[in-house]
Length: 276
Image (tube, rainbow, N blue to C red; front, side, top):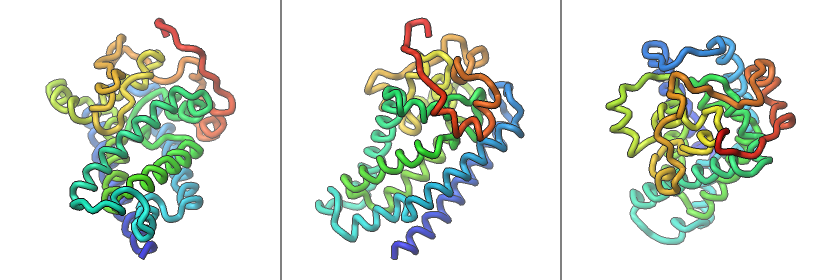
């Protein structure tokens, strides 16, 4: 049973991931927001290589993945919704929202705790944003994120369908809001109260720390407003802002996969200031 769930979940997730990836990549090509500072071919080669490495490492260490673990929790009666009977639609909705909030909190912790920031800096050191940035993370961060999700799934007793839907939504929204797509301002204003848009998330990748420590959401836009970390626009404007980390601009450190894998062991984060 677990093997079947795992295989079907992987097929569904891969299909949706590459479908959304293809749509956003095409949209970037047709309607780009910003000019890239590093060639797309070079960025894609390294970012996608890191994504493949992460997938292999994650599946090797967590072969059941999140959906398989949810199935095991269900069989063992572990977690809130495996102990309390509620309609499936209600437990699915609550779990998707709760998991999204937990990922928001995880993201904020990775900006706050110095040792976690070292790992997360691999994501922020990207000097440009495009669809591949949404999957550019250090392998250790990916593993820690899975541990956090597993704990959350065990506590919630999240239904298998909720976990699969959440994983698909999370990866799909990461591709969407990291994309280099010029969305018309009117559409952006309509979407922002509900979901994180590319313009909203781009602020989070500013070189200025007071801006990168805002807009932590990946999917639902409510969390940043609720916890007062929402910032509407970058001070330098979307076309004038600089993306990345001020202390790490060298191509060999922030573009090539060898530099990305070793970046956490070379990086420190200075204290924040009002000007930076």
